[in-house]
Image (cartoon, rainbow, N blue to C red; front, top):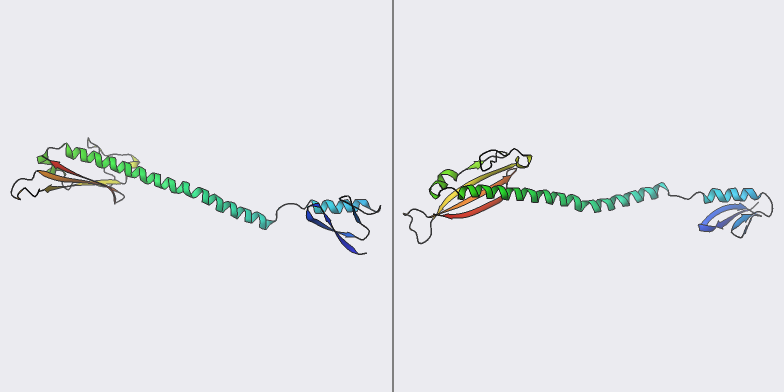
Length: 183
């Protein structure tokens, strides 16, 4: 017997014996053992699917695509958190500057020059320490310096004070506000 290979639809090739011929898209064997041809064609046609290598390649490609899609979301969350920290720090600096500005001019330097609140010890306007977890890593300090104008002599009382309020997050300065106060 001679082996012949027949091509079925979808480029599926099956081996056959001499005497089996293709007839109208189906394999027949000139009247002998017609069931054998159908069994062979069903076996080869039922072998459709993905190989392990194809499945692994698809998984890798999907993983890379998912990482590319999710990366902006994680970066966006970090930027959002930094923005919230800076906004809170600006509010804390503004509140402390408001306290300084509402102090009489003669008492500003004595009261606030060198004033410092350690990390986690930030106080509100009434002097109560903020206990929220949002404030746990914040600290702030104030420096006050007399400013002399060129037309003033160094002998006279200064008429201006430069007040600087700095806010720190985990020891790093993130906000600084300067203001020039006059009598």
